[in-house]
Length: 141
Image (cartoon, rainbow, N blue to C red; front, side, top):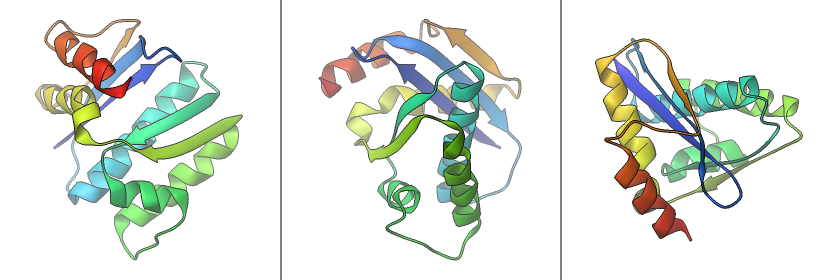
């Protein structure tokens, strides 16, 4: 079981959406990160977002998404799917974000291990994650 989570922020870094889900799959940590990117892209599109700046604390995955690294792995297949999916957006970029700025997304993903259903909160998050989200916002600015 892997947990995937995401946070969508607006241009002033306020919360627009949080989402999480537990997925029953056996995979490497890199593949789990790639699955989380696919999860985020799909939900962002479904929410009507068309311009994205996607951040991940997995540098290897970001390099794969940017096209500067390729490897023979299941993660690469998921990355190719993610890159293909970006064509439906007006704009989509991928950037590395150190874990210190991305603790909330990790916490949301970890908490999703307790449930397999999709949980989406618009302009909100669960109370246990709020202090971390606010801390991440302070670290980003």
